[in-house]
Image (cartoon, rainbow, N blue to C red; front, side, top):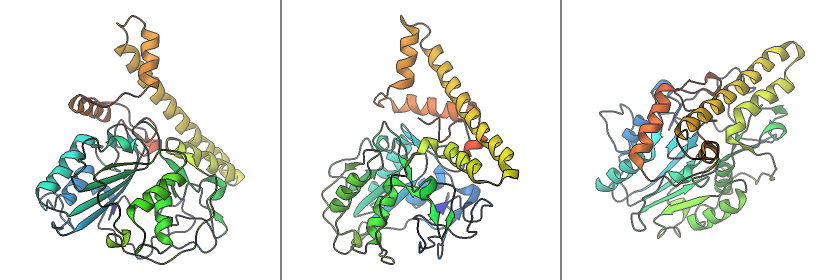
Length: 345
């Protein structure tokens, strides 16, 4: 398990040392008993790849030691954009590096089959070359041209009588985890879960890629069953992941005591200003790229608003690295480079 691990002990957490991913008066603390293998500044894309490929030169703690007799399950959750997903530290993970890593795992015979669940905006762009017989099944929260969504947000984020002030989870992840919580892992198949979660995830398009020949195997062959929990009533409380930071700041301003209103409003405005600067920056890039076209305004609008298929991986990698290394860092979005959870769109 790797994560920044800065939420449970955050001063903004109304339940210090605890984490909850569903509302209610009897919600379980999902942080309890959690054994974090890597946390803090060392959690990077390179560390993730080193762990997956069992590279003990790069990863100094636990690494994957699976063999061709094992089924491997990977769950990834963070921000994303076309061809990239974020990490809390260092540069992003690019689609070509993830593809290379999965091929390395195949060549080293590190799995009998591998199931990869990914929660991120545009996560459907991260698995372009999985083979139908490659024994890798990837399931993503969205297609390659749309956001994923947070859920149990705002007024719905009530736990034990307190409002958490954020979103308790992500819509795709909450749906598959709550399905697991029903305690039917021994009988339910991946095909059944994917079908169910696809219907429940109604703000984005869940996609699956790669080898579907083992979809009919029981989830319990891969995941360990925990405590059986009751089903949580559905609520329409989802927020576009791109807007979670600004929404969180607005909810904070709404709910803080009067003497803290000014400080909360300043934070909200700073996020709005960062978003506007991002919009202006990319509009300027689009304008320069279209300056010599016959219709520069139309070209710029098309570049900013439309989504094209990702074909030239090397060109895209160079461009994405340039933004990370040279564009302004948004502190209000907890960014580590030019990309952040808002402008990755």
